[in-house]
View 1 (spheres, rainbow, N blue to C red):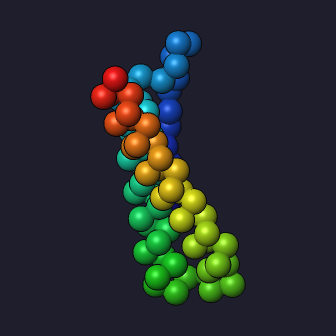
View 2: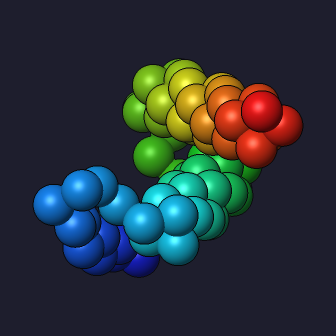
View 3: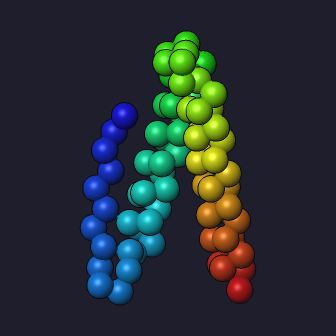
Length: 72
């Protein structure tokens, strides 16, 4: 899994930084799902699948919030 380096400004992350983090999280989620589907870590399958679902839901919610804020 890749590592993500986030540089924050005092005033908060820039939209570009935030977008980069979200893209990396989505890539990590997809990688995790691929590993689970490939049979890795069978003893952790249920926990990892739950983590992948939660991460997917969080990313969906962030996208919804971004859409709402840009519509205002």
